[in-house]
Image 1: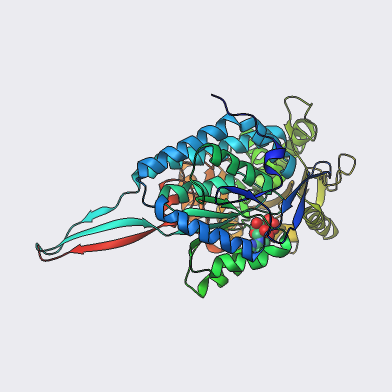
Image 2: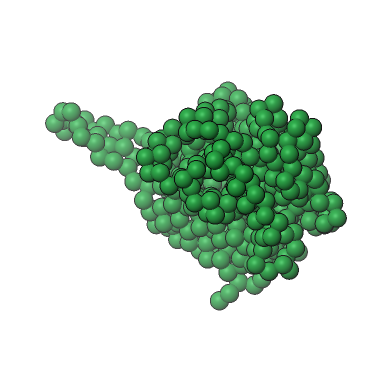
Length: 490
Ligand code: ADP
């Protein structure tokens, strides 16, 4: 039987703790806006430390029974959650699209991508296996077992309001942990509708809790989650600055932490590359979510011989195939940036580049005629190391192209950053492919591919881009402790 369609009225006014839809104890709310048209779409309870403290207690209590269930049973709950999300994909995508501004088709894509982690971890829940070890003496048997760490606190960003929750919560639940989820203040509604799905799937009260709060309360709530001894692990996706703060706050109690932070992905095109495919890969990777993804290519490094051809091709491709309008069929539609701060940040990066001598091939300004938060897809050349766009994560629809003359120079520029999340390169030279794959300093590499994330593979970074991995069978490791058992006197 198909579930009743979900709508705003059931979720918008409530946090979700212990299986109940509740208000903030202080009665405060914060507003959620649609970035595409500036309309206020919901008032959501603004929780404080007292409310969140209660959510932690509840999750700890639920942990006692959830962690004791066999993996097979947790697997079945996750599978049911996956099914309810699948049945309601369109209504979830509508809300996700409204609060994040991403076009509906992209929002639907995120529901499917995000839900693939619930499916994946429903399968992995049955395989949280230990090991029997080879003993050095005949009177002992040695064993490793894996045990869930306890309550997992999730702090998630607005750019993938659904997938950043499911990628963490799927693994946590499979491992036997319970969750307290603090969604981003721009996009709490998707988190709440996911709870409605969990409720319909019969996931027991207290196993999943959502504690929305505004930006002002985020710091004290974040500190509580890091310092409360009942929380076993913090898992965070967001900015490097906030990630570092949380890491510091976890040091007092040596709390486990998993971090997915900012990237500064290089996208290298070598002269042997198939240029048409490189352009398509670049556009797909860059303009997805209007450039607001941590794995977005941020610096386009193009070999001398093909530089002009690449720049001309990508500029005309953008002119002909990218639109703000959902009715222009066959074209890639891009949405607005998430909020005013993000818009000003992107524009500031572009204007800084222009002031310092960058050439604009297309775009280079706000698309104010479309809507307040829209930005024109932009291509820049003459990009130099003194520009902000050369060094910092742009998080907007801006392609900055940098010339290089050989592989070593490309790698030097690509690796000359403190970030190391994703990297991409296009080449047809097999030896070069192997060399560059090994030397590029990132956690994930797209080789002749621009979009690489999938539930089966490990997502995560090196250097300041983070700690730990999400997705794949490694994703569960963030939520378990290994216990060594030594059976003696045999
Ligand atoms: P962005 O710049 O993309 O908004 P942030 O790192 O600021 O990225 O936000 C990611 C998540 O971290 C959001 O849920 C936000 O509310 C939360 N957050 C922001 N500041 C803090 C903080 N001091 N402590 C805990 N969480 C925070």
